[in-house]
View 1 (cartoon, helix red, strand yellow):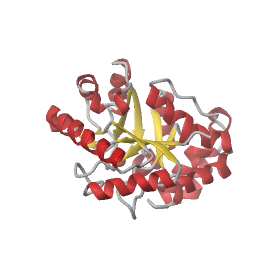
View 2 (spheres, helix red, strand yellow; view 1 turned 135 degrees about the vertical axis):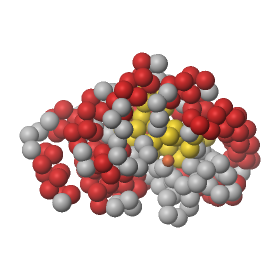
View 3 (cartoon, helix red, strand yellow; view 1 turned 45 degrees about the horizontal axis):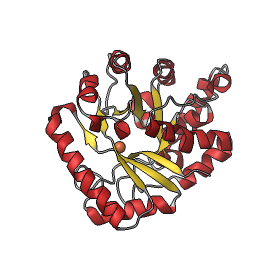
Length: 264
Ligand SMILES: [Fe+2]
């Protein structure tokens, strides 16, 4: 069986709120290897306001870290990407620097700020798509307004916005609301990826195995493979992802009413 590919991870040391130093970053990847992860895309936070210098710094740090991973004999291949803070005009950043794209390919990982959803959200993602990139929304289940607004989530999904849920959300690490939303997205085939969003060794580790088993139980082994292995691998090679078996369950009448009842 192919190993997992983690498309969302903050193990690159000393560049954001993830790994605080080299030893932590290496230990996070050792843990990832133990979990069955073969490849990790390192996705430090990157805001458009940070400018292109940020991209150069990340490339330099990545080269140093990749060498350290090899020297340490850790059986994980690292790739560089970024988690872009949402704003208009992200397509320009993705065009200008490969660091802004996952493993330098066509996929871009975008994080929404907390608080009310921008009314121009769909337009901003439309701009990214028409520029030739494939936007992936990071952990929508953790966004309070989105998790509580299934219709909006479906609208975004219907516009080819890909959804990456966090393994920790499935396990309940981010509260009940995020867990219910994550489980629903996984069960209904609306999710496209599960990533670790790992930040450290304890509170938010690079842990995928237990969430994988959970998805096997919820949605079957094929769906678990799609979310943890096949689709993340397509990000690495720049190929389109495989859509989920969403139609039947997502369009079942009364589904969202049941979800709301679970939440309230
Ligand atoms: Fe993240």
